[in-house]
Structure formats: C-alpha cells, structure tokens
Length: 122
Image (cartoon, rainbow, N blue to C red; front, side, top):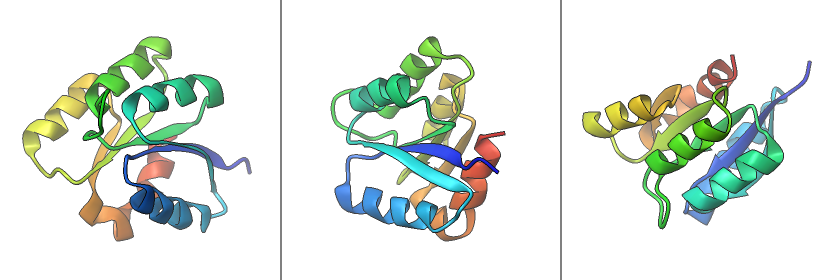
C-alpha cells in the first residue's frame, strides 16, 4: 500500500513538529514537507504534489483561505484539510467555500487527525 503523502502548513514550529510525529507514527501516512506560511504552502504543494495539504488558516502573509484558493486554481483535485485553532463557524464556512475537504480544530487532534487525513485523501 502506498502511503498518503501529506504537506503540513502551520506557522508554529512546535505544533508542526507534534503533528508530524503523530502522522509519521502511522505507516499509512508520509509527511513530504512542511510550510510556515500560506505562500510557502502553495509553492510546496506545486513542487511536492502531496495527496493532502494539512493547512492552518491563520498564518502570516498569505493566509490559509487565500492559500486554499491558490492551490485549487493550480490543481482543482488538490485535497486540503484545514487544521486550525479557530472553532468559529464563519471560518469553517470560509474554508469549505474556498474548497477545503474538511475542517478540524486543533482540539480534535487526538481522535480525528489520522482518520481525517486518510478520509481527505479519498
């Protein structure tokens, strides 16, 4: 079985490290890159062609919503799963309207991250 290739985009080094450790513990997932802002996420998505981009919506410079829109202009089949600290329903709606396939809050990580990434890849 080929692992699901994931790009992590979050401006927190510590949080990104934790997410990478969680994902890499599952043999069905391979983290192929890390981005610290939306612009870098768009560039790396083009270069690395991950199965899923795991993206925070609150980042410096190019924010997550704009990054989702750019990634989907580049590749309409790109799968973006938002992982953010915001539980605001308006942010969830903006992410879905931009084309995200799912929305997880950082509080949901323990129970839903790995299944969420694998579902997003389908």
